[in-house]
Image (cartoon, rainbow over all chains, first blue to last red; front, side):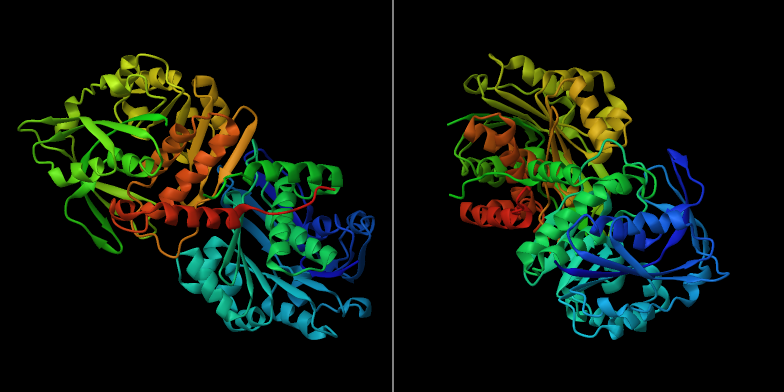
Length: 308
Length: 308
């Protein structure tokens, strides 16, 4: 049974999509990563930070999934990170209405002793210095360090970002970010350049157009499941990251062949995430539903042509 | 050995991409369809129209591939259809600089007796009335009629377009056109609506993001092969259509399972088309190269997860 350490934000989100809007609901990368990864038979801990305003019920949600929450620091008198955003009609882009960093501004993760030897470390989207401090606290080199990041850190903390990119095995970013990071329009060339920066595996997420996994000269593609309705894309990328890293922790196999499966599981779980607002769908998701959807992914992609 | 009848424009194209520009070169839907479809072991004829200015060498190119060109009408004193366009830097969009319909304006295809019983009819992008006249000339109902069309006909000839859509088995259009045709943003819903208009099979082309095949409740997805360099996207959609219809004509099997393979072959051939200007790459393409690329498509998409 593998051990996964996930680091990421915990937040209140207020979301507006063409289908409705929410008051403050549970958000941030860490809950999405945790809810996805805890579908696998692994030991998992989350390192994060919350304010005194964070409801106990949200923590219980994670504890009930056997997630170790002891490294989720509660700052007395502090307020939890808050984000609000509004999606455009096509759901492919959004405007941020408000960001209040609050306790996240001074987040200094302290990794529990029991997780300093984690097999897989999932670094959710955070300040690169915060991500670096997590790597520095590990007692031994993990089997796999997975990094998620975004364009904001490319714009504002380039040097620190390059330091953390150099230390990780897998990076997951979206297509536009891959292009920004490398100055290459072709994703094949972008992946080659990112390879040279450090990560042996590059996952480029293309939202409704699926995800590409690059490793040496190999490329694997996982489509997004075509859905009748995408309700709320919030957290899809974090859910993908949680599914990906959770599957690797469960199988303890970092071969390219197995990483293909991890990408499929990431896409699988993300396809559920977008069906309802926030974490709602992920909270009720069953292993049986995941297995049924795996069958849909097979039907969607597998074909039989005899090579002549 | 199946029989394929392909109808489409023959043109001079003048193309500008970020990588260079061409003088007038061979263009139009029909040559791309023909060059792709003639990779399969089938009987194939092209119905089209050219002016007196059309070089014999371009016709020889098709004849040398065993394509029956007897239904390519040459209009004495007429000028061949001309199109010039310039691609934007990302190659995903283009501006039309000039269109001269010339002899295409009065194109009235006459189907040769020997092809009035074709197994597969590939209706390349043309005025819907022209496409309807081809269907009307068939002696018996073909196994499969495949329709390609575009937004221009939705804007200008809606009623005629609806008539031809009602008579075909497969429609291939791009994602934006599927949305325009149905008013549905979700491609799943768009395909369901198009289904009700007539075609039992709907192929939605997403360019560099691949192609989706819809039939009843089944969906299949063929990715585009990620390439280091896309040189010229002109003709990729027509090449896809030629690969798709050529494979169906060769196998004479219109099951969903076999149509998956047709979509993979269409994507396979289109991935070569974009590597050079115009038809250049398709003229030299060998069966061996196609087989090797099929292997790449398998590696790109096939995975092994045990269902538990």
